[in-house]
Amino acid sequence: MPLQPARTVDELRELRELTGDENGAQRVAWTETWERARAWLRGKLDGLPVAYERDEAGNQWFTLPGESDDELLIGGHIDSVPNGGWLDGCLNVMAGVEVLRRIAEEGTPPVTIRLVEWADEEGARFGRSLFGSSAASGTMADQDELRQLTDREGVALPDALREHGVDLDRALEARSQLANAKAYLELHIEQGPVLESMGLPLGAVIGTFGVERSRFTWRGQAAHAGSTPMDQRRDALAGAAKLALEIREIAKRAGGGAVCTSGGVVTRPGIVTSVVETAEQLLDQRHMDADTLATMLHEARESAERFAGEEDVEVEWERIWNIQPILFDEELIALAEESVREVSGSSHRLPSGPLHDAAEVARAGVPTVMLFVQSLRGLSHTKLEDTKPEHLELAVQALDGLAAKAMTWVARGTGTRTPPGAGTA
Ligand SMILES: [Zn+2]
Image (tube, rainbow, N blue to C red):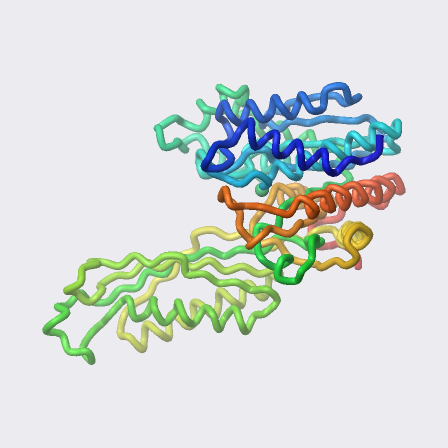
């Protein structure tokens, strides 16, 4: 039977009925509802000639053997945030199921095809996202921190994982799963407003943004709000306020989709009758180009020093977290664009703001690409998350077309490993 994109939409609605409630999707990883979704997924693959395996990190693998051991992977995640949307993650998985059905129907493929459903992409329960994919890619380096993590009820992460058959100490053994991987494809909702604003259903993703997260601590002098003249204040908030506006200029100068966000400022003493003594300001900066991102951070730090001088306060900078931009494979991006154009006429290349499992796979050196399908109003991680059914069907078709092209590409042996970012033009 040929590809049936409408079946994917029906199945997504079925999953929503099974694992959602009036507040949205409730498939939080390492919970019973999540396991119910995963068992449901296994049921959907019953009857297909695929081998099933659950690896050491809890990822589920469905393997359709081909004439060659070289593998084409299609992946997604079925877990959600609490009160999440009905498409984030599971669209990828269910579209992958439909593609697998189509390929299996046509007999033994030239290369091995594997569908992977990654464990705990969202990190909603313990605050550690990309669990399963980072274990498989070998980048999981925070085992000691993971051991200390607890959920809101005080349950430790290793204990929760054990209840679901995962031994944290062995999770990194999942690395062996990528040994024969020659290409990785992931379809996802955009979770942003770009495609909708351009009137396009689909786009090819060039990579995930590099991210710099900083904390600026501003220190001035608490002083009475009534008795301290304006020209004699050392107001820590004034420095933070100037920086909060300056980052708009920094992003504008950087261009290329740069974003800067001052997502929080905590002031002390934080009362209406005092000048602010300390202000702790959070800054998140993202760009696709590592050098530009470094410049953006440099400019933020330099402006902060200048504002501290102007306001007669002190400022201290601290890095909270950072990650390099991850570029997808140039040849696969070209195939993705071709597939998008075939089903919807025109394509657009765009970067991904959020991280995805695909970024982890790319970091492991597997040529990777993602497709984005339009998100209505750009909303995600809420029950309001939505995409037009006709666009969902186009997305399944585009993934199928891309899988067919990538299969040929892998079979030709062009899918040799290139380090991330070193893709040929
Ligand atoms: Zn997702």
